[in-house]
Amino acid sequence: MNFLNKVKSAVGMGGTSNAKVREFVDESAELAQPDRVVWITGEKDQIEELRKEGCKTGELIKLNQEKLPDCYLHRTAVNDVARVEDRTYICTKEKDAAGPINNWMDPKMAYELCHEIARGKMKGRTMYVIPYSMGVVGSDFAKYGIEVTDSIYVVLNMCIMTRVGDDVLEAIGDEGDFIKGFHAKCDIDPEKRYIMHFPEDNTIISVNSGYGGNVLLGKKCFALRIASYLGKNEGWMAEHMLILGITCPDGTKKYIAAAFPSACGKTNLAMLIPPEHYRKLGYKIECVGDDIAWIRVGKDGRLWAVNPENGYFGVAPGTNEHSNFNALASTKQGTIFTNVALNTDDMTVWWEGLTPNLPPHCIDWTGKPWDPSKYNKKDKSTCAANPNSRFTAPAKNCPVVSPEFDSKTGVPLSAIIFGGRRASTTPLVYEARDWNHGVFVGSAMSSETTAAAAGAVGVLRHDPMAMKPFAGYHMGDYFQHWIDMGKKISNPPKIFNVNWFRTDEDGNFMWPGFGDNMRVLEWILKRCEAKPIEAEETAIGFVPKADDIDLEDMNYEIAPGRKFTKADLETILAVDKDRWAKEADEIENYYNTAIQSRIPKELWDCLETLKKNCKD
Ligand code: SAT
Ligand code: MN
Image (cartoon, rainbow, N blue to C red):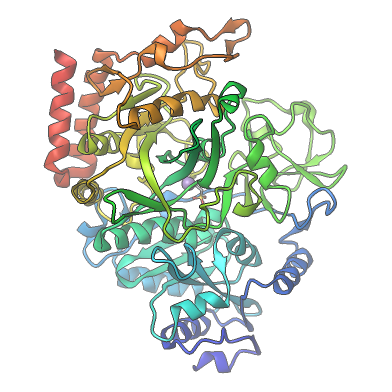
């Protein structure tokens, strides 16, 4: 304890005698030289103090406490609104371990670079120490972290998104291990922004950003990048997946995990409200998680999944009481909004799609008065809310949070779904022939880019298992890990691929999505039964017979006056062999150029089968 003795004041010492914890905190303080060090307990009074302090510094704006109790608004810097994939690094001793898709930096260089950037940057400021758990504290799934940060916004978000408190320090104990996370805002300089991962040292460093995915280190950095590396070594999986539970008409409950790239509707699917016809039949969906799943093999030979998070960091634009009633309800209390618009008439929040009418008096996400008369849907620069604006809401707020949310053992998976945004080619749903083919389907995923990451939007790119930005090691080894996991499960979930985003020649969405996705989930469940309903075997896998997707009381108009018909369903279920032959070439090219030598043989075999099937 050297530096900690020198700080002007230290509040709490975390009551831990774990030398590694104290050493990490001491070293971080020595580097960044804060005036004060405050240990976070997550207790109500402390959170209230921090909210007050945040309002004083301008980091937070207190919202209407009658309409939105304990809710606050935060604005990031305008150049700091999304994850920065080009500045995110995996720092392993060997470059090859990070693989060809990740940015790599030599760990020694990376430490030096970040230390140089962060040195003395907390002078005059407070360094907060957040002990947190990913997963239920004390459960077999749980892994612990300590994040130090000079951002009140980060502290308050981490207190929603993770389980924070002294019980975490107790669980780490005197000897236990934890993931070290160092975050310093520094100057929010985009040229010196780095999100560094050191999987071999259980360490994360993030500098010069204040945006969620870059700084809430428990989330993508730990629960996916570091955890995927740990999972490979320890025989489990960390995946970019929602987990939902479905109660069926006969009262049984089934669980499904689904991987989609960021901002492709995971939160919407996870909390879906089935159409009335399904509700009457007795179907009900409950949300276990909306973004991340940690998955282990159970004694029964099935895969069991937990959501390691404690809240939702959801995309705000487009969320409304029809598109996602449950997500909106989750934001009504104890929520932090980031980069949405402030409705100054009643000090509430607004974003595009929240209400059909545009509120007359808003401050936009950059802090300027917003002129609704200039609003043009197609021009993002006229939006009141940033396209990647977010809400951070406690999971327990969700009206349909699963009773299994806090389960220490997790839930058994009947199905895994992959999905992306594909305007063409990929049908509404298809089922892989077996586990290895399912791994192939996941490895071959492509999706159009979204505002969740900095860079162009709407560009088709490969995003295997929706993990391109999140796998903490070589993507070829990651595929191999999936293949190896398959060998350990005697009762594997079935694997499906869905595409809610098919468009017609005019660019209209052909499938309604949202609650109507229940129609596809029903078919998926029926394929998971001991005696599955029949399906069409096609070049790419099993596709539903059009009659087996229930269209009862579906009132969707693809375009004004153009009702969705069974013929449209047939169009989006069709498998076009010529297009798939091209897709197969595309996949081959991706394997060869992007992932290079480490594609498992099982996947090459599946590719050969696909090519052959497209010719037959
Ligand atoms: O910004 S986050 O990475 O936390 C959200 C996302 O992009 O999925
Ligand atoms: Mn995500």
